Amino acid sequence: MGKISPVSAKYIVEATIDIEGVVDRPDVIGAIFGQTEGLLGSELELRELQRSGRIGRIEVNVDTKSGKTAGKIIIPSSLDKAETSIVAAALEIIQRIGPCNAKIKVEKIEDVRISKRKFVIERAKELLKNLMDGVLPDSAELAEEVTSSVRIMEVQEYGKDRLAAGPTVDESDEVIVVEGRADVVNLLKHGFKNVIAMNGTHVPDTIIELSKKKVLTAFVDGDRGGSLILKELLSVTDLDYVTRAPDGKEVEEITKKEIHKALRSRISGEQAKGELERNVESLQPDRSQYYDKAREIKRPQQPLPIQRPKFMRPLQRFTKNKPLPEETAKFKEMLENLVGTRGACILDSKLNILGKVPITELQTTISSLTSGVYAVVFDGIIERDLVNTAEKVNVTYLIAMETKVPKTDTKTNILTISDL
Image 1: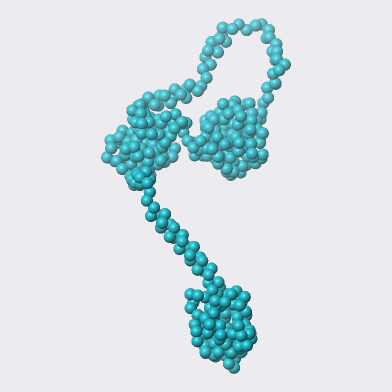
Image 2: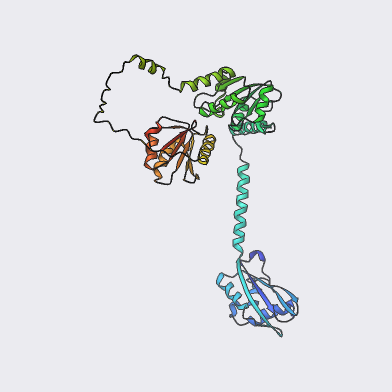
């Protein structure tokens, strides 16, 4: 009797069999051929189909337990879908095998080509990946890959705070302190290996200990965030020198020439502390000249009536709500985390973050939100246009580094870093 090769099968018929008695495997196969004989016509006769190779070898696996027999029937088929389904349905007419009652149930007809197709797709993906990995990169890609791997290997963890640092911090007499890991990588790229990062605005104990033993140079970004970090460093460490990146630039993005120029123009820690104090004093208005002039002016015996031009609006006073203590703490924490990012956080009334956007897109984003905005915290300066937009959508609080709008000129509460 001819056999069909499993490789050429297109479908696999899987059925279960339950027999109320004890029978053997040959009894099941004999019942399948005997009870379906002449049922489907000469073209779908199982013996003829198997002889011609269109039906493969019928596999029957049975197991006897407690006087009953159960098992599984597997029939491979190279017929089409309709013919295979007819043959599978014919199995279920078998009700007796030998002297015992039996029940056959077709569980499924599996398309072998689907599994083969899945194998082809997965194998093709693997072959394509191997092909792409084997493509030779150009010289620039090779150089960049080697340089990047060396830079990453040279970045180490230093001290109990596990700060990102270069490999020669311990051996060098002078150490450069920068803000983050990206700054360390950029300086390593240009040959400076005695570098260590703070990893945040808080000064770690490792940096404080280093300032007692080594000559420390603070290299901060050229923005307000850099000024805040510098102020913190000067207050808790013994800084020897201070330098900054060019205005508006960060240490991680400047070139080798800009790095050398910044380090050559560094100033002493005492001089930097004095400049910071003078900058704070310059922000306070000098009213002495007004007091001197007031003494020289003789007051008239009768006060002159104040005449307000018709085109002037009456002064409008707005009632402001003070933030709750937990709101103040949340605003302060978020503003400190945003230092140097030039980003903004939009909050709802429960102080949940609705979204984070760059400050260049802040005004457009607020305009698109007609309601639900309770507060906006961002790393920048509050301008009149932003205040007008905030008033239109009923924003309660605007929190930023500085403001150019007087706090009494708007119904929106304006808070700066000094207020927090």
